[in-house]
Structures are given as C-alpha cells and as structure tokens.
Image (cartoon, rainbow, N blue to C red):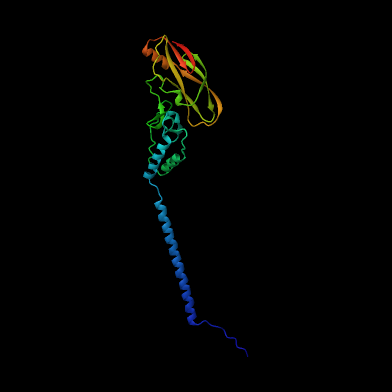
Length: 259
C-alpha cells in the first residue's frame, strides 16, 4: 500500500513568512516616507522661486530705461500702449525697440498687483511728434503760448511735399510718403519762432511727420494735410498790426498770405 504524505509547514516556517511580510511592510513604509520627503523638498523649492514686487519693479525699471533710451528725436517712434490711460500720456520708446520683455514684466507686475508706476493724468495734451529729452523718448508737447511748436521736419519721417494751395486761412498741402501699415500724423512746425524782417515779413514753416508704430511697408502713400494759418496771423498781429501780409514758406513753395 502506498502512503501519500502531505508536507505540512512547520511553526518555524510560518514565523519566517511573517518576518518576510513585516520586512516588506517596513520597506513600503520607508518608501512612502521617502516620497513624502521628496515632495516636501519640491514644495520648498517652488516657494523659493516666487518673485516679489520689488524684484519685478526693479527689472521693469531697467527694461523701461533700455527701450526708451535715445540720443535724438528721430530715433523715437513706438507708443507703449497700456502705460497710461492712453493718447499722448502713454510712454514712448525707440522705434526699433524690442518691447517683448517690457510687456512681459508689465503683465507680471499687474498679475501680482504691483505698483508699476504707470499712473498719470488723462488730459491728452496736444503733441507734435516725439522728442528725446534727457536721453529718453518722450512726446513733444505743444506749448499753447506758441503759434506752432519749435520742431523740425528732420525730427520725423521723410515726407515729400507735392503741392501747396492757399484757401482762405488754410494751406492745403498734398504730401506723399512711404508706408501703408501704420497710422501717420502730421503737425506744423515753426522752427525759428520769429518773422524774417522784410517787406512783407516772412515765416518758414515745416511739416513734422510721424507714425504711432514703425511702418515697414513700402507702399507710396498720398495724403492731404491742412495747415491752419490763424495762429501765424495772431502772432503777426501781436507783433505788428491788425492787417498785413506774410510770405509763408513751406518746403520749396512760397505763398502770400494777406489778411
């Protein structure tokens, strides 16, 4: 007769199995602790990366100085939209300035509720193009005491004067220029701020031409610009008499303005 003997685990074997399970549990616990430590370390690292408003504003001031730096007015020509309530209170940068970092810092500061120093009045004063003041691009604000600002056409973009016609107290000027991808503006300049003494007296005016953004297009554009002569008439009357004649020069054209 064959006897089948079942192999039974001894008490000692059972203890070994329990020890093995305990060891595994201990290892799992250690692994969990390690994972928690790693997570704590990562959280601590993230906290150290946070930037304060002092950090953001310091970088913003440095970047602002870089994009607005200039040596002459003709370098200026990019309006930094969003730096004020708009119009001629927005800041002005160089025409060739790369403003990507500037705006990134401006938005970062806004998200962090930082004071970026962009608050101003919203009076939108009249301006005739741009100026380089203390090595920084600015608007060329018009002094209300002057008939026209003492600017120069050389401070702006190239303009060709095609024709000049006198209609009452207005010079109707046909101009041409290169562009087509930006809004262009014109202002009347009186560089000398004085009449040339002759019979009759003379005044040399110029057109200042600028655009709110650099215009890299090369289309041939035409525009009609009206020059109001009443401020010039008022300057004459303050210096001479109520009626008179002024020879007005604009570009290579001269007209006789009687009143």
